[in-house]
Image 1 (cartoon, rainbow, N blue to C red):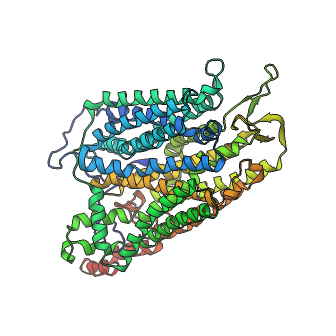
Image 2: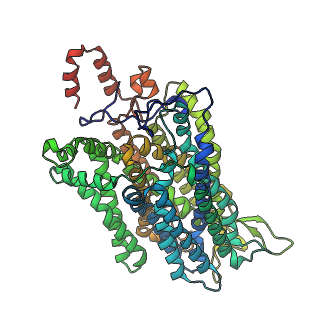
Image 3: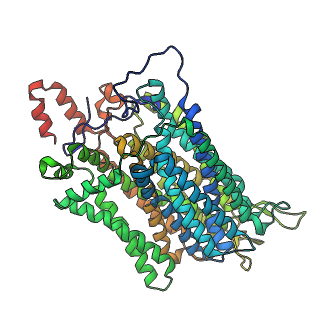
Length: 639
């Protein structure tokens, strides 16, 4: 049985799903279908080991560099540049937003002009120059905020835009899915890719982020900590680029085939102008632009009431666009008006490709709220940790206690991912499958939203407890600038462990799955573009997170004891739970490109992405019982 989408879509391109993380069905073959796959008694070499190992090693170095720079960025802005808490977190959100907005440009350049390999190479040079400028600007001799901003936003953010959407797709392109062994390997590639990301992040957070804040006396004085850590990041990135090019003779490089994004928007614009629903969708897409602009402006306009007005306007634009795309994305039949047979200028195949992408828009929109919650780990979690007990020794002999950096606790997120990915892949997913509950992509995403909401609730309750505790006497936080005495509560920073672990588990369930969803459930020609759109959801998530800090700036005070940071966490928990309700609704309209294993076993109640879709199961049963000569009538009645 071949599944179809609502709104009368034709059968979709094959994609994923075999129990235990393997795939049944085939993705678009990477070799010409006319060429038979030679049978051989010799074992096939591992593509992950022989080819993708270079890409995975490169991603490890890239993430080690990126996490070192961004892991302690709010503390750097406050401690070295003397900025306040709100502006420090807002500037951090600007970087996170730009880093996930620029992949749209990177995907366009790869698809239209340079191909994935050369786009990654060119972007790496830009990124490397940005890291070098940040390192220079962090040294006490130069200590230049403008120079740091140029390196950060001009080099790192824009350089990363050419790397992020293309490196994962370049890796997945190495597999020939006509060969069963490679098809199984590709199913594991996304997990290995995410593992490489988090090994790099783990080392960064556990070592370099701590060195950045505290130095490493007597080898690295505290005042040189940030410059030393950023220098290590630059070196790691240089090594990553060298590894990437050392494997260039092994890569399978697909030539650019034209801009998939350009074709996507051309179909969207032509069909959108001809229907009321299409005009609403176009309005929603356009609303993201003022959302970014207004929210970013609010970071730099401190005068009341303009600060609040700009932030509220930006957040409202993003929320409006999110709601519209969730509501309208369940039916894509209006896009057919751009096909030639309906008076449009596009082929049916091009329109069907766009429809396959547009049916994922509700999930892209829901991911925005997830990323707003996830972004707390890189902003408000750090601020909260700064005013908890950071001591790991009393310093009785030296007279000065030894403290960790609050940024170091991000290692718990990376560590949980490294530990739980194999547990989920090898133990949990097979176990629930044996119980008759297939862990489909959307079920994983829905579960991740529940865990993310739990993390926000725990963080809010912990903040209330932190404020209830008395201050540590005579010892102040290492996050403060030189002329500031920032109190620490008598509550160990390690009490943040549960919220970091929960965020890590939610990332496994939601973020990794989104990579797979936006690769497996879209046409081959759209994969780079869809990875860019997937990253774009995190941009808007960070915009929402930054807007919340701007709107409720009175809650995020210089000394958190005077504010109500817990309310930020509670608001986000409410938003995530609201998005979960929308998620459960829209999954009832989603059908995968190919049947899931349990569907092949005739357990039709499990076709649904998240919860049993009884209506669709009944429809499938009716289809099986209906005589062949009446099935066409039934099919038409379902559209």
